[in-house]
Length: 350
Image (cartoon, rainbow, N blue to C red; front, side, top):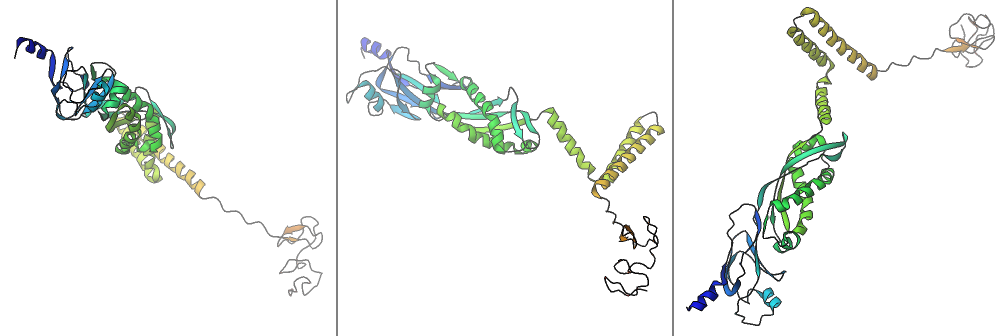
């Protein structure tokens, strides 16, 4: 090989590859240092990589993992863009980008400010949440167009801010659509994470990305809601009022035993506990057992003035007329003196 041929070859690229030494690099632009690419150059694309050729700002051919010898046969888009004739052998200029398609793990998300949720038990409440997620590039062409631009190097930190903001902005809708009560959220983290994964997927797909996992590690409720939950749990003890009174008495005895004042405090505590139990028993009994209605007193008309008077009265409280033997023993209708039968019902009298 002549001296001039060596100089020419030193200005050409015959091997194109990228070995990723970092864990967070998503896109790497191959540095050609102004050199041209030889036709027939060797291109090596490793697993979890995709090589994208760009000609004058336009995306051309995309190469999946494998080893290639560059030619017009395996670069149809580049051939069309440059109007190469069949069998073109001359060196050419092009930009080469390597896009990492591996899964980026253990990316953290969290709510910097509380998000609102409408709950069936507590109404509107504010929640804080955090967890982890993982994602990968599934459409290198869309990713280069929408996210990458013209920078030489892009890391995970360049896109995870967008994903985090998307997660937080959608979290309120996700919690509402999941219809999981606030009291049951802690027991349904896996279900909520899967629901969030399905809901967020369409929002990141236009960027050429895919969420592979979404994990909810914790959802914290407001202090007031936690206190209400504690009270509701404590009320389970009051199911049996007698046991509740015994519980109160036992608590009073324990406090009195710890108090140097002694028996007086214990007696007061016992009395208060028992009195409270009895009061609650009385209150519940009063609401659960309504008094029976008293039957109305039976009345009959006075044989003289016809005013209603209590049955069995010997004299009328209105006119003073005597009532004995002057009313039917069956229907109570007035009778004429000495009548042996009632003119109303026919019952025999006396």
